[in-house]
Amino acid sequence: EYTRKIGLDANYFGEGITILKDRIYQLTYTTGKCFIYNKNTLQVVDEKKYSGEGWGLCNDGEYLYMSDGSERLTKRDAKTFEIVETIEVADHNGPLRNINELEYVDGLIFANIWQTNAIIVIQPETGKVVAVINGSSLEAQGSNGGDVLNGIAYNKTSGKFYLTGKYWSKMFAATLNKVAV
Image (cartoon, rainbow, N blue to C red):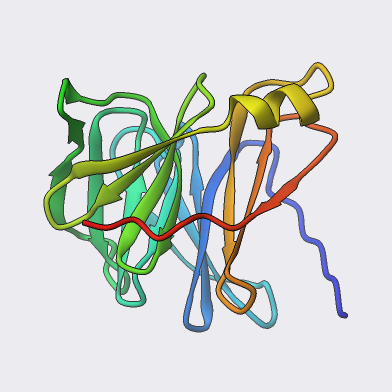
């Protein structure tokens, strides 16, 4: 397997990343820039500006979904990065803030809530939280003194989620039951 590594300029703190077609999109935390790379060469081919913070990023094959630490997800046009829609995320108790890491799987968005071990499952059309996954047992097994759960990735081929946390010594492969919505 071929592995290639590039660094981000020290002026930027890299956050959410997603791959859509032949592009890699990378948010920056507080500088309001999204770097767009060629997936094969890893060369920057474009950059887009946005207001606010950049936290998590995922895509549905056509649109980008971005979190900024609030209770909102921003649906963006992948070509222009313009806002298509703002989605208010809420469960039965009301809005959920600190939406962080994002992963789009089978029509649903899986999102970590920052500073918790919770992963919420969001219906993107409505913003409704349809399930909550408690990752506390993973933290107990894998954190090794690190921070809470904040890494979610999905492998479509294997059907497995890969979960980890900031500074954790382990990553976990998990198969999650389908969520009925």
